[in-house]
Amino acid sequence: REMARGWTKMTASSTKTMVMIMMLTWTISAKEQLSGKECEDLGFTGLALCSDCHSLSEYVKDQELVSDCLKCCADDSEDSMSKVTYSGAILEVCMRKLVFYPEIVGFIEEEKEKFPSVNVQYIFNSPPKLIMLDEDGEHKETIRIDNWKREHLLQYMREKVKPTSASL
Image (cartoon, rainbow, N blue to C red):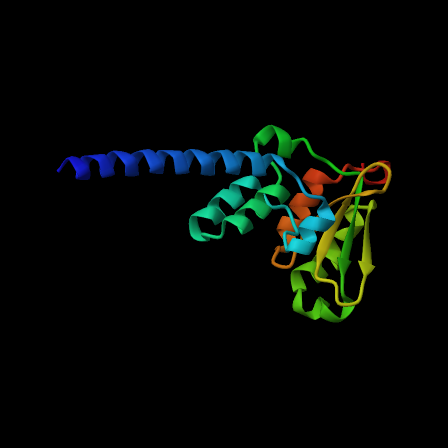
């Protein structure tokens, strides 16, 4: 009986220690950030929010995958996300694949003119994505838009791309 109590105490203590180590590891890995290119190479393209990574951890038990996700995610607090804007964007897509993306075709044909600082580039075999640009025309973020509806693309552009004098 004494041995069973000792085992229970040891198991509870070990569990607490393990949980603390996991939380510490989670916190450390969450603060480490990878470059956009490294994230894209890992398959994390698009606007991955850190809350999405936490949701992923509930369903996927691969700690390395969750850790990589946290290194590539954007903080999704209201303050940090709502204030980020870009000077322009490149909508990159493969012309041959456009037939599979009628929502993107609709945006290009009917809405794109509302955003003079957004250019369309046709790159062979490229999945549909937005490359967000800073004031110097440097790539700041790449967002996959394969499954976006036209109205979501339009709303995102209105919120995130600074209006130019031509569009005011």
